[in-house]
Length: 92
Image (cartoon, rainbow, N blue to C red; front, side, top):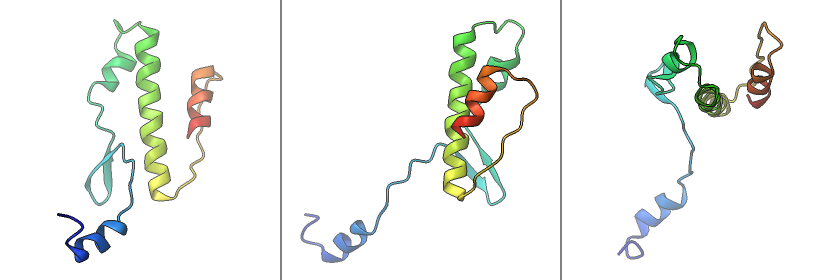
């Protein structure tokens, strides 16, 4: 049925696939859609390092997608020489 509609075929060929891992509800703002991230990273009872690492990796992947979409190459600064901070900075 799609092949019988030449106007639709022309438009489908022009489509590009984007891997967006963020939401942009406003023109000047974005959300990573990770509502439990703050609790997973900073809650005192959250001592599970695998959970924290998983959350950090999700944040880094979504920020990298955002930067790529915006065509930006950010410089990432951090205080401590912790290996996870360096790994996250290198990913972005």
